[in-house]
Image (cartoon, helix red, strand yellow):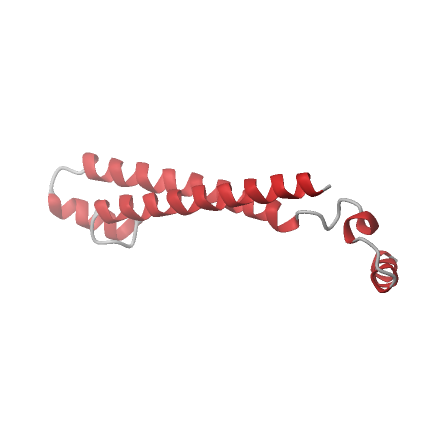
Length: 108
C-alpha cells in the first residue's frame, strides 16, 4: 500500500519524505555511518594486531610467518599500513555522512 501511495503522490507532485514518513529519509546516511563505524573498529583492530605481532614475535622469520598467517601480508608493517588506510577512509566517510545529515536537517 505504501508503494502505491508513493507512486500516486509522485505523479501529483508530492514530497517523498512527507509521504513515506521516516522510512526513506536519510537511508544512505545511516548505512554510511554504520559502515564508517565498522571500518574504524576494524582499522584499529588491524593496527593493534599488527603492533602486537611486531612486538610479540622474537625473530623476523616468525614475524613473517605470523603476518602471512593472520594478515595475508608479508610483514606486520603492511598490516598496520592497511589498518591506517581503513581508519582514514572510515573517518572520511563519517565526515561525509555527518555533512549529509546536517544538510538534510537544515532542509526540513
